[in-house]
Length: 229
Ligand code: SAH
Image 1 (cartoon, rainbow, N blue to C red):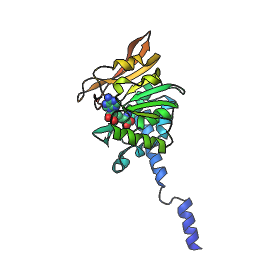
Image 2 (cartoon, helix red, strand yellow; image 1 turned 45 degrees about the horizontal axis):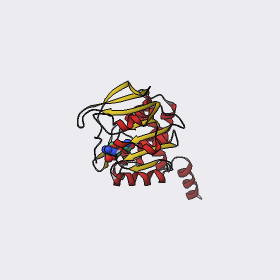
Image 3 (cartoon, helix red, strand yellow; image 1 turned 90 degrees about the vertical axis):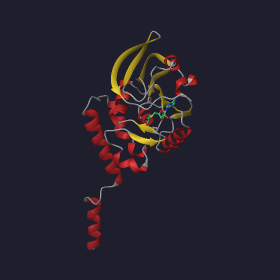
Image 4 (spheres, helix red, strand yellow; image 1 turned 90 degrees about the horizontal axis):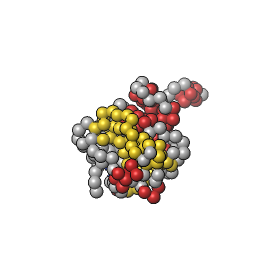
């Protein structure tokens, strides 16, 4: 009997914190301190970042650092962006439910999952077959199976699915690839880190107005390079 009471106390009165709560706590702290504590105010972005289990998008040995205020390596010399940068790009893109979104640089699939929390129409291109395969499997397993992942060169965009309301480029390039400009819908938003690889770049938001890109916002950032095949 004493034993039963003890078990009950442990289960209902605070035995060891279940793992899921531990991750959720870390995620909520990330949203509060790193996103709301800065300038992330879009409720759709905050809800998406509160939902996606970022610790499952990094290598196991880095899971405990997944909610930290920094990028992390994901293998093949690539990185998952800092949570704030993912949130900022999504907020700048003004993604709304039903928008058709193209991401260039799938990487871990994390940014794609954040987008998929907001709209069911997410298309993502990754040049490295191994990363594309892993991200696709991970997205399916976590309930983001609607995200379409294509292995190929993002410079070319995804012409069969164009036009896109939003295009996010998550690797640095000195010039916006012309195919992406073409595949952006009228009124569409393009967010891209512009500048030389290995140096500080400018995360830039453009809006397509009367067929031309109008620059609207800029922030210094560091991304891995958008490479040619
Ligand atoms: N958005 C990712 C992180 C991107 S890191 C995430 O949420 O985890 C940049 C990614 O762009 C890398 O995976 C890299 O392999 C990919 N990449 C680089 N050049 C590319 C190209 N030309 N086309 C498509 N993907 C490219």
